[in-house]
Length: 339
Image (cartoon, rainbow, N blue to C red; front, side, top):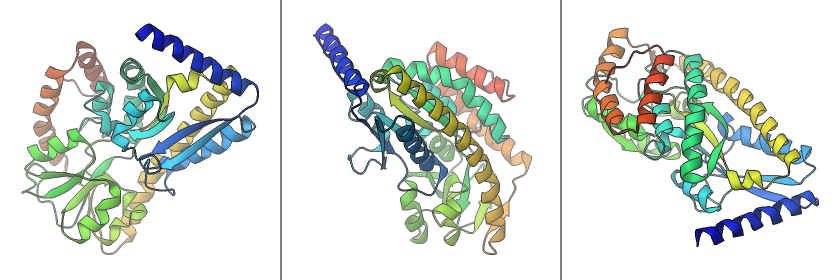
């Protein structure tokens, strides 16, 4: 049965490749975790789509779908959708797949690579081969391009007196691992998409949100929070995935264009993310209703002590390859880790 399916798959790839080679159009469905445009994370897909269509003279058309709404696919299910062929590419976050892909877990691990944006770039460049290896084996997919997120940090309605003891504060989180750290710090993690955060804050459903600082402006969170903390829990990365079958079905010259454009928008998006952090802080400081706070180093060290058992727990459950990659990742960010 598996052999028959493999032969059928080869025939499908051959037919698609032949059609494209003859000048017919092939269309990729490329859903994004973002609800709409106006932010570098989805905008680089639009840039990529336009460039690919122009350079291939319409032979490859990439349709960007916001939040997969047109398909009814949740961003957390993009990996399985890629494997099944329901979509050809996808934009998600490594924080979403911390349970499925060990490399993604390392990418989104709390209190790792939070010294500078250059540090988190280095972290993800080193992780990319490992993530790709796991994606290929489990989901027949690879990273088309990857851009580290701006650091996620607390934006709150009431003041945090101690990061080591959040006093039951309800904070929105986007990643499982950060949620574990919030719980260990006596807080209550609440999982919800960014599109729901504004309303939840205004109604008092949550006390704050752990998210990247551009959300102050892009999601209008400056209207419903009072405190902005330059306390960086993690970065994680925006990953743009592609089905290996879909990519291999393209003629070689179109594959080359796809790779070149992916590399271009990765560099562009990374520069935009770095710029976004600086602009986000400047925007926060320009708002008289917001107080921007830089935590002291002793507070950071206190949370590092809390996160250590979480690192240890993850390490014990990881594969030998995952354990080795975790140690190497921490070394790249200047942390000597001993489980």
